[in-house]
Image (tube, rainbow, N blue to C red; front, side, top):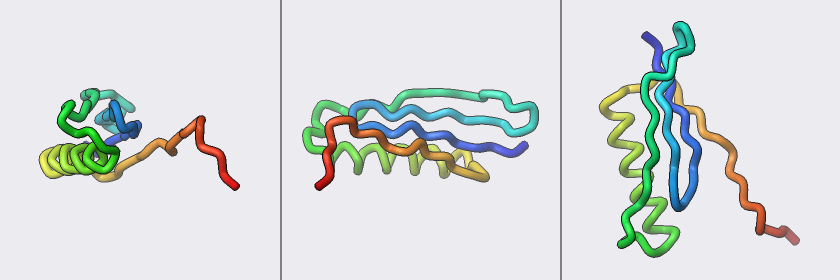
Length: 77
């Protein structure tokens, strides 16, 4: 079995999906929500990274697919 972990990143909620490439089956999906004690963006990113790392250690995916971030209120220049 070949496992791919898909990540939909977000500071308030990060979605994860485990996909089996043979037959393209969704094995599991969940949403990570940082605890309220993670007030800053830095604390949230750190917590999310730690939780995703734990999942990767257990599931050992062959690949990781991360959706490109979208920040509608960001203006460059």
